[in-house]
Length: 517
Image (cartoon, rainbow, N blue to C red; front, side, top):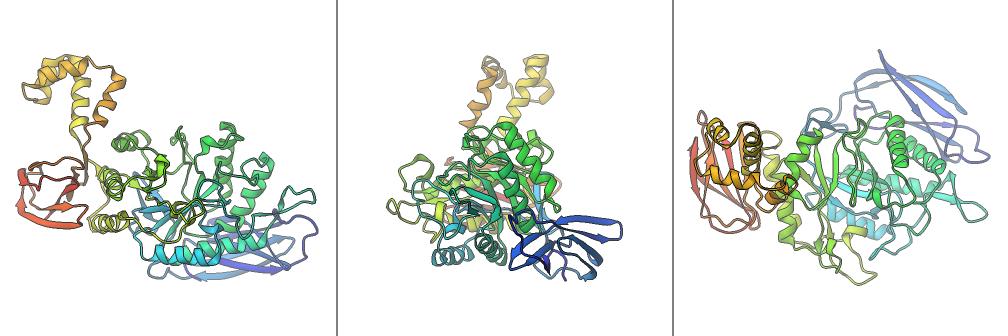
């Protein structure tokens, strides 16, 4: 057995007479002082399974009890090349638990696992040729525009009166779903698994609280030992009218308490963001177009910030799904060049019953994936992850705060500001503080850095003829001008240091990268 790879133990026992979602089977795994308690599940035909994800090498012992029993020992060898374990949050960034770099470049295919085999296979082929290393997808099927098909299977069997019997999971559904997760793992793609959502015609969004618990318990028994999963409590949790804030907090607590391996966990919004300060939440999962706020959210929450929805490249008439490929590319650059992470989506109109990537998968036809691949290669080639860098707006915020405290003349003197700042600060102090951030949303800057090893600036809509860099004076840098749409990197200067001016092509979508020599 290998580190970071799922171990499965199978035992034969009696076929359950009634429901089998909460089968009486559990196991304890020990390695020295380390101990992990795990629940098993019924897999059909009298088979009970226990799954374990070894994260440290060496001799492990196990003991299984309940309707079946057994014990034994096994040795876990170091992981194979390319197997890095879970993705974990590390301060404001992500990484694999073995320390390998992980930068999420995600896409969305909500009902990927609810399509026929041919379409699902086409989606895998598209993903294999794409830059995406994370997919957002739902456990339950989704009913909305351009997504009306019935799935091959449903998560539960039904009772005699036609209601869902969560105590009897449909084994064909769960077996097939696991195969989808496994195929994505083979493609080195993380699955951001959405547990609930409001777009429902089958009754899954309105299950009673007790049934929700049975469903989540079974899901965690089967899936928690799979290394390429994240938990997303919901897609647009705030639109699920049947659930209160107390319900959502209970769902969060249940998942956190019943996941023995501590996968990443967050909750996605439509209008009202989740409280990302909550201890069980590992990262920010945002739907927003206010992409200038990435540095603010990073500082506020102290966790990685993922914009999991910022509209989709496409041509559907709905406003969420018809931005251009150029704009999708720009939005990903705005987020990444501010120290965050951004998820792609695609929604090209193909008729009311046509295949739309965002909902069902199939083929990627947009212009942004190639540009996202170009950005991904660039940032993976940097010496470290990007952190937000100071911007003009941030500097003015500090100046205004100081001016309010000690007066404008003292603030100008202390911060060594140019004399013309006197009038500017007078004007800014007259603004309603609530309007201050909104003002700078309209005059954005997107800057980030890897310590003093690299500096990245995305100029977005600015068509500047030149740019003034303020690099550390005690190091020298190689400077490139990047055309984010044409996907070119032009070396323009070597041995740059301190205040440096570089010429630019005076067009949209330009970025500047300075890397230490």
